[in-house]
Length: 535
Image (tube, rainbow, N blue to C red; front, side, top):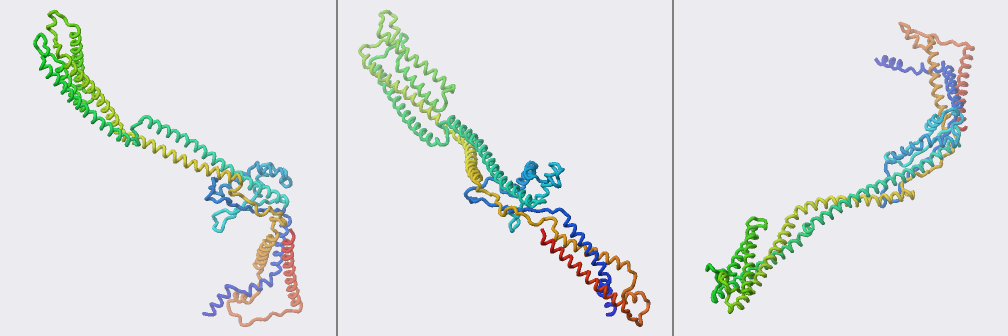
């Protein structure tokens, strides 16, 4: 069982067999190896050299702390850098560089302007450099490839200046646009705030005395008016009591000294008219305490009072006319006659009564005025809840407009500071760390790399050629091949018998193989060293 396993392992990998193949086919391997390497390495010297000049541009953060001046430019550096790159790689910008430096006048002399621009875009390379976390862009590399190293350096310098200047221009423009936009919004907010202020002033003017802030004053004034009303009503009651007193004195005086009579025998007296008038006015005061002046009962009673007052005035006027112009005819019997002995005291009492009537009228008017004022202030107090709600709505709109205005005002001031900072170039900016390099070796073709590629190509070609020769050879070169073909085991074997000529031939082949290997290896190493040392 162990012998079978050993035999299977030997069949899997026969090192001796492969060593024999190397000894037999080393020349077929070395010659294709050398030819493949030489072909690739030689091609690297016929390709046109391309020199790349590169520079590193650092993204510097603002020198002012963000706590003091908040920038008003977008913080997305990658988007802004993409926008700047598109502007720099535009047809107009690239054509200006192409014409100023006379680019692509050799190999692309007959190319159109658009083709030159497309070719230049392919020669430009922009590589972003991020921080250790791979999130924030800290720098970026700008490189340009050209046939002439000096041209590559000049174009890279032009591109670097464009990136630095365009970044400043873009940031300043964005900052100014942001400031102008906020100023426009601020003007709109100012107009809205002025409109809200006008509405509040208009409402306060239209509802003067009904505002919530005037409630305490209205209550105080209302309390004072009510106290005045009570005082006036008390004085009015006192005056009415005096009127009753004066009227009773006049009635007693007339009862003692006689009463004027008419022809029909009915007593006609000013006191009776005054009593009726007092009763009517007392009833009117009672109705006014419950109803307004538009109530039918109040209006009807006021008409009766007016007729009674007219009757009283007519009675007094007739009495004066009769006293001044007495008539001796019989018609005098139908009018009131007055005793001359009692005219003086009675007229005095009547004068006091008339003064009392005037006082009562004045106080009644004062009571009416006070009630009117009380009703006005009560109406103001009743209207204050609705006015308060409307004023609250207007005030809420005003406060919102004012808060929005104050917020925009603060943003405008901050944006103006940020714009000033950008104009002073104190914001985020690009700074060139390394000047565009003057390349001493071509970036393409990398001849040392071509040496390695040629070596792999030669090895693959040598293996393919040697394998093809081995596969086409139908001779048997080992004992195992013979044993595999025979159905029976081998009893004995005849050793190789080499003649002196065969031995000399084998030695020559071995020396030739080593010499060829040394030549190939020396040539490959020399070519690699030459490619590395020569630009």
